Length: 197
Image (cartoon, rainbow, N blue to C red; front, side, top):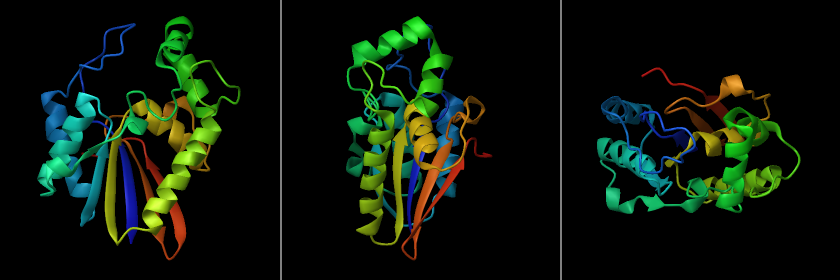
């Protein structure tokens, strides 16, 4: 079986209002949860990608270390954050968060159809990432790939490729994940909002 797990980073402290919080790292609990999360991953672990933001790299490294995957092989990927596959212009996109609020932007990410300044067309961008995922799994040996990202990236992708209705109540908690499996040439998608750790 071939599998990709796309996971939100582990627990971090609250981010101050009207700040991006790129420098905010994991809490002690988040560190422990990352190590526990590793036990959910089927081996062999073939590859690990992470958003370049520190808390994602930290989560990826802790999981990799728990599974004896060499951390120097973790690839940092800007599609997963900083800015992520959804952002065309970070300054323009940030204005929506400041002017409309997080709930309005998050609702747009999961179901908005119009194009907002600073964002890519979210349906097209999500389908492009999904095509990349299908190609990755098709060309991969059996095993698991891991991508560590942020809630906005995970929610956008989950809502737009998952085939299920996705609401703000489904928003990914820390270490919530999307599991995409290729089994007998069939793609299976499973979303877990909040794993029991």
